Image (tube, rainbow, N blue to C red; front, top):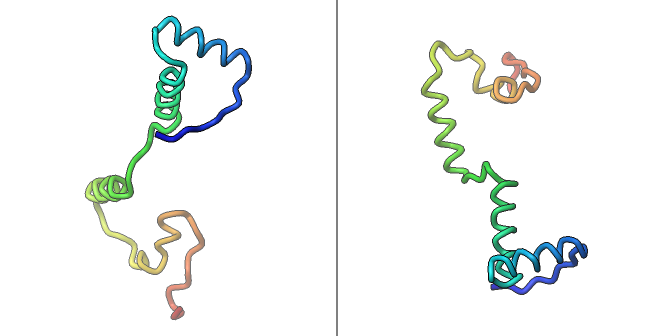
Length: 91
């Protein structure tokens, strides 16, 4: 465990002390619990790169029809809306 020093407003410190007394636990335990729950609420879409790739594969399997002939050259255009490259010139 790491020791961290944090400056708290008086009202928040009082609320932490009050909660610790009600729960019959330490202020440190109250703070750890609050931080853990707060961070989970702030980062609900926490996922790995592998999860993102698997999601892309699932979405790609749903696609039907023909892909544009210039897809490999203009991938940025079709993916992100960037400008199209001239397919007749070599880059």
